[in-house]
Length: 137
Image (tube, rainbow, N blue to C red; front, side, top):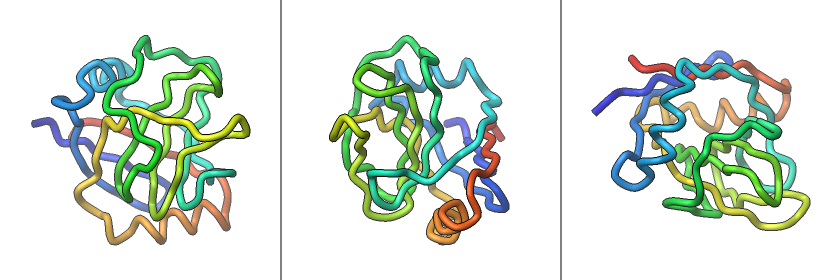
């Protein structure tokens, strides 16, 4: 199993792809590695941060979709009702947009550094957008 490294702001996490549950989403995202962007705090969803991706297309539909990612679960919304985006829950979160509740593909689970999730989320909330990089270790 490939170990995924996520460096977000001053924090570092590791985890794995959910290949058995979201094979198409995992394969599509891997094509973009290393993936670098900015992460901002969610507006409607609760305790989460997100990467707005506009009209970027990954060429996937829904698989292993959820509206309630647990802390450390990362979901990809492939676009449609709202823009394409990636969301990371750091506490209680219900994935939503100005159009209402959405569901995204749970394709990554963080396994190391979970004790830093709350601090990371609060840092994004109070300090603003931060750099995030996904890479294979």
